[in-house]
Length: 96
Image (spheres, rainbow, N blue to C red):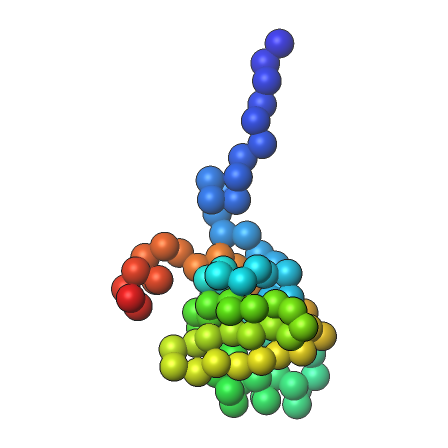
């Protein structure tokens, strides 16, 4: 009988999820932003755009993210509309 182990996300590739599902300390890259055009425009104006790396500082009661020198607090409802993937290791190392 052959046994199969479940492969971890790091073996399969980046794990897609929404920003509200992240944990404090996670480094992620924005994949897409859902929602109304006005909400997408507001998030873009503060730097939440596809391709941008974010570091999650806290997740409750609001999601607090850091991007470069900017720190933003997002309501969980808004964070749920931001789709992200895990940041590759080399992105974080280059920024430090």
